[in-house]
Each structure stands twice: as C-alpha cells, then as structure tokens.
Length: 191
Image (tube, rainbow, N blue to C red):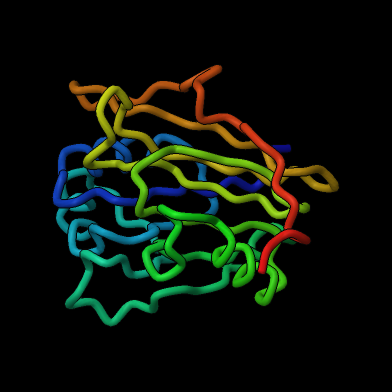
C-alpha cells in the first residue's frame, strides 16, 4: 500500500513553464495533497492550463502575492499529521527558524513548511519537521529549480524527497544533495 504523499511547491515567481513541468510530473503520479507556499499564487491557473491538470491546492500567501486574499499561514491535517504552512517572510526565516518553530508549536504541528529563502532544506528540530522545497521558478545560483514530496507512512516518520526541474521540463530525483538534514537545534535556547 502506498503511503499518502503530498507535493510541496514554493516561489514560482511567474515561471509558468517550470510550474507546468511540476504539474505534468504530478499528474502522472497518484499524489494525495498539493501545497503551495507562496510567491506565485497567480501562476497556478495558467500553469494548470498548460499542464491540463487542476489539483486542489492548500496554499498560503507570500510577500510577492500582494493582491491575494489567501491567508499568510494555515494548518493542514494530512495522513494523521498536522502541518503548519507559511511563506516565511513574516517569520523572518532568512535570519532564523525560531519564529517559525514557535508558530508551529503553537499550532501543535508535526511539521512546518515554508518558502521565501529559495533554498531547499529540511531538518527535524525537537520533533518538528522543518522543510523548504526550494524555488520552483527562481533558484539560487548553482541550485536547480526544485520541489519536494513528503510521504507519511503509517506509524513512521516522514519520507522526504527533493526533485529538480530540468530545462526541458522533466523532473528527476535529487539523491544525496547537500540540502538534506544538516543540524540539530535546541528550542530550549530560544528567547
């Protein structure tokens, strides 16, 4: 039996072809949830049209989605887990993950998903998965445009996979990249 799996995307920044490539990739798989973490909400309808795939998105607004009525943060119940979703700019994730973790704990979340930095990253910090899928549209220099999937096997911790979007529009699994789990943080030291 396949574990419930969600697609996590952020920061498409009007790169419709990249977002459409992700949607075409997702269309060929039996994914159970779709998360968009901001900065490109208005890209979703056109990219969906290009890919001929119209999933229902769980989404939050980024600092570039200034005309959107979508909330700045949300929680999502999925496969027995609670996910805290935000873009990250309000939580100042470019400086620290402290505020993000405080909000995730307040939401009683098992995971905190965010974007904004355009850097693919995950870690487990005091039992909370913190994950950034990277940027689908404007990756940092020397990094691929990327997205993530999170699978939730019963009675196990999350299975995390990162995927790169190639120029031709295909996606491939990024194995052993440097944005895997990298550190341990102690929340007891936070202010």
